[in-house]
Length: 235
Image 1: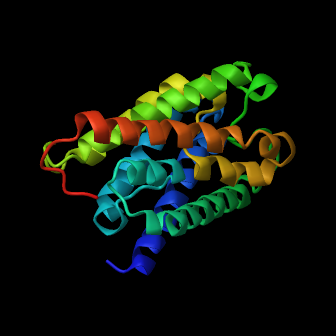
Image 2: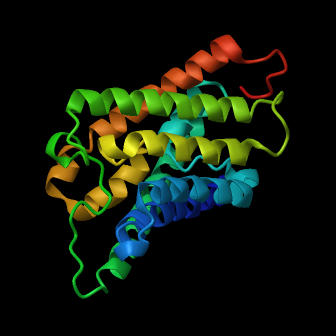
């Protein structure tokens, strides 16, 4: 598949993840008594990945996440030469998703920007968790996410089930991490809203690049070294 088509797919997919996942938090989570709440937001993020995995997985692999791209490269499942273009496409797609969400959300007369689904710690954590807690949570949860991705896409795994496992894993880690940081595990997802919130969101954005990348790299490394089978097809 030409790189240009793969990058377009990654941009569209990451747009959908940010627009759908963050949109559920910004628009639907607190909509009166019918708001979907934390469970709904967690499920929405999982559904964005599940649906896009079936839509574009056969085109780009459906990474939708710079940490996942780097983790797969560390795990020898993805070519290093394509890492930077993938990350750029993901960041652009995530920013576009946040921009469209902002344009829609500001159409509500009493709209207040607030956190706009941005990720944060200390006073900007939904439950006021410290930076240390946020850092550890993001590393561990991204590690778990990458491990599930590596395992679900292993040639030994049941065919066709990877999107379901990966989508449900993302839902689960959101249920754990939303009170801590609004959950990132994805630098592109964090960057999009932060561009509109500015200020504290941009100042704290470093953690939501560093921690997911560290967690994903550890997941890719450990899976490839300890759990990969002899019939591995990737390099």
